[in-house]
Image (cartoon, rainbow, N blue to C red; front, top):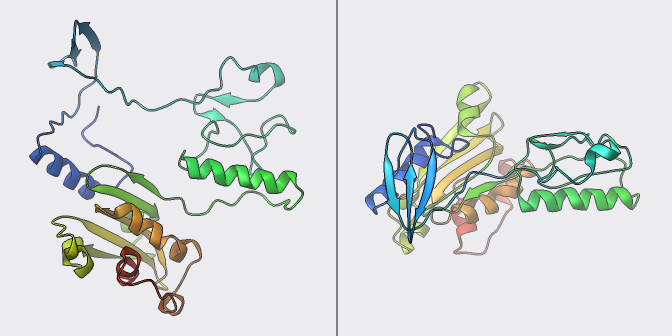
Length: 248
């Protein structure tokens, strides 16, 4: 609908994916809104106002909405809006003995299955009397399973560039890495973001192994490993994890 795709991700990497898919025959249209889809036998006509497209298949991927309506939340006093149910730092709703977790919550954290599992485990410990502390979210990665893949975690490139006094950025071209040359990868890049103590606080990568790389780097970000801790990590070799950590 706008001029950017995947707005939450590092745009140069997004454009790499778009350019690659374009070369492989995918057509991208920017700044358009689907106004109408009509079925004509085995075909569909998609009208965007500025263009009409004839196709035999339509994937409607316009996001998701929380399932909060018509289940009696108003009757018991649980407050919510179009983004989900309101909760406090203990995942309590506006009704003290009712809690919520998962995608149904109005929250800034990514609405992902692992996030919902983390919240449910927190509630399990709370109900078991094992903690009385508020929930503290870890760094939560996200990935787009395009080809190549796009993944990120922690401080973003945009945030780091907006605060150069706090962060430094290091860029690596994936085909230059010897491990990636085994599979003859021809494209891909990553950006590693460090704080002033050279502790890794964020990473983003576009490559065929981007999801595995970000997963491998999670401990360094979550537990704030510095150079001395990183030196103590001996990985299985050769693996994507040993290659990723070798860049730190």
